[in-house]
Image (tube, rainbow, N blue to C red; front, side):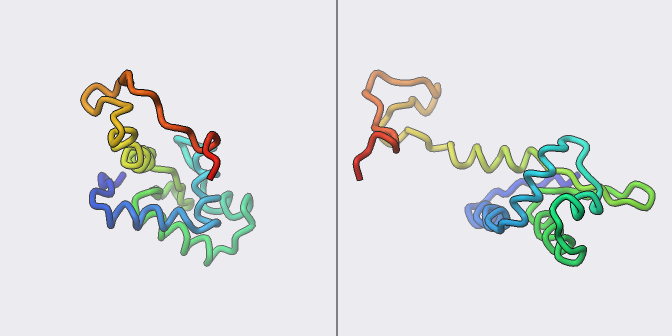
Length: 125
């Protein structure tokens, strides 16, 4: 397993960009459904109907940004999701959550007494 998590904003953006391609997102979702064991490449190909060379390209892109890992088992290559990378992405998104308007105390991550801002569904714009 690779021990690399995206650290800079540029690396995180590249990781999100890899997930921004529909076939790659489908691959990650399928692999999450088989977590933690993963699936062999042939099964991913059959389930998603992606041609072998195209699937290989997508899996390579996902490996480059450490979203999936590959393990050879005799004649098969098994792919699985690196959940720590996905968790790191989610943590990055929520790192500054609600700190600007002090709804959440950044040290304790507890709600403050300040009224919460409107949610997206409550806004009229």
